[in-house]
Length: 153
Length: 357
Image (cartoon, rainbow over all chains, first blue to last red; front, side, top):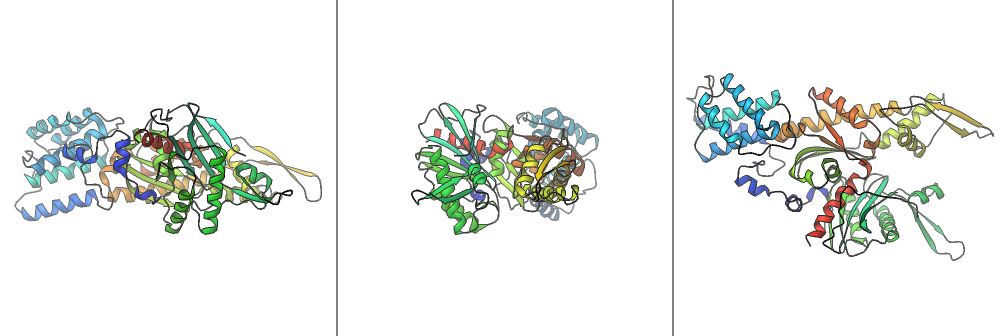
């Protein structure tokens, strides 16, 4: 038996609390989209993926706006898109997520068509228990998702 | 035996569906807290984590005292065996085992129980091995034993009436006597556990003792237990009032003195240092390694637990200074009784485990 508090079974705890399993959330594009691994950096992984994709697609003009004109139809594209919108909804709720998408359209990060497509995804996620205004840090993370999706297009 | 008991009806963790007794335990460096159902209510036992032994003058048998009674009657020999948070060696492990056995026997907790321990997240393999022995030797928990981080257990009552915290993304900060712990939790998964022994409640006690000597121009020296009592009884960020105390002079007579700043200055320093550790070490590392959970968690209330969180108003002061340091608004919440929160959360988990058996 170990009493090391770092080695507890998170899945058992979730089951006790009646929470949906992380695997199920992954398969349905729910709130946790990374394989649980504390040593893995979400941001580093995204940057690595982005750099790899960009190196293969040198012809993409990253400076031309709008950066994202369509949502990639691939499974990876859909997953990244859902992860992004899930993040926006989880932090700010439905209304702020939709306002943020309009804001990104005004900034010409995304086209009006992409905005419409993305707003249809917003309602797939439940309203969070706690929400707050989106910050500059949240928008920086959004730009990273925009760049990732643009690379996949 | 010397202990404090009270009742807490906020959560019915009595596990009516099962005969198994679900017990939550926090073996703290200063205080140990147990929670378990008794006569349809949740019973709370809160006692000092200390032990004293003496020889019975009539029978010659070794007698054991624990908790407040031991500290009061045998201040010269009483042993606080978990001073660093975990039993450091075999001797302290044996004492901890004896203490815990005495405590649970005095409460008549059934052996056939499910026990959840709230354990501090300290990098000390030997201490953890010793604690494992203490738990294995314990007379309770024959049905099931589990252990979870103290900061997670403590956050459970701070975040809701049930186990809502388990399915949240949030940050917990545990202000203990011997450690300042912080951790982000993503749906029960631990991210970036952080612990430092540099900012502690015990250090505040030491600073209060030194400050009292300074404030009284060297006329008054208090021990660390008195300093802790000053902190617990008079420390108040909302409505601190200067207080007077009296000491007996060695040559006879007494000396009355007033304390105006010796309690609140060390407490203010503590909050500043805690904010610095959380903002510049823990949160900056979390932002680097887990950007998305960091952004989500900072939008949710930060759960504050541990004995130091009992100082009135500390949650608001911590919230204000952390918001200033991060240059963004954060919200801080604490359980009604932060000192009992870890055992309370552990008991709720134990109740669910018992229900599922």
